[in-house]
Image (cartoon, rainbow, N blue to C red; front, side, top):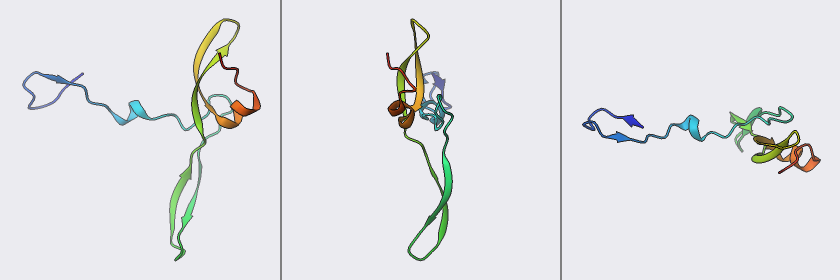
Length: 84
């Protein structure tokens, strides 16, 4: 809760962007975003980035522990992550 100026003591919930960002890095293999250029029809180049397909999964860590991980879909398909 954050008190904003001019709210006369009332608290408001202000969502900050960093609270909603899903990590662009896989916790299992470390895969991160790739960078390159977008090339339009007129060959004008602008920077862009390709994010890996990151999914939030509940995975088994050890015998009886469950942990929330950010895993890329290639790790999930390869069986590197045991859901549980």
